[in-house]
Length: 155
Image: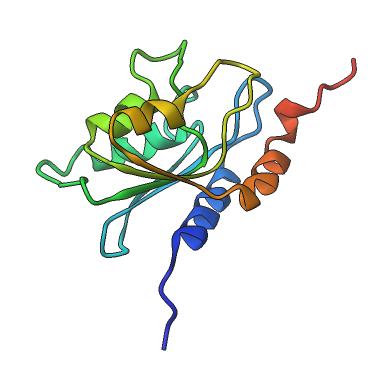
C-alpha cells in the first residue's frame, strides 16, 4: 500500500527541482511543482529553465500553455520560495501569473528575503482569495541551496 503524498512531500519535490537551477549571483535558485487536485504532477520548473530570466513558477506555467481549457482552479503550486511581486525582467510577476492561471492554492517553504526586491507574494495571493500554506521547517534547505546569494563573497 502506498502512502499518498502530502503538502510536505510535494514541497520537498519543489525544493529538489530547485537544485536544477544554475547558481547565479543575482538570483535565487527556486523550484516549482504544479499538482492537480488528484495528485498528478502537471508541470515542474526551476529558475532559468528555458530562458535565463524565467522564474520557477513561470517556467512551470509555460509548460501548461499548450493545454487550452485546462482547469487549474483546484491545482496547487508548490514553490521553494515565495512567488515574486516585483520583477525587472518581465512585465508579469509570478504571483500574477499564478493568479491569472486560475490557481488558488500555493504552498511554499520560505518567504523571499529583502535582498533583491520587496516581495509581498503571500499577502498579494491571500488578498486575491488564494490559500497560502507555509512550511517553514523546509526553509533551511532553501536557504542552503541559495547560499550563493545570501553569503557575500570576498574579492
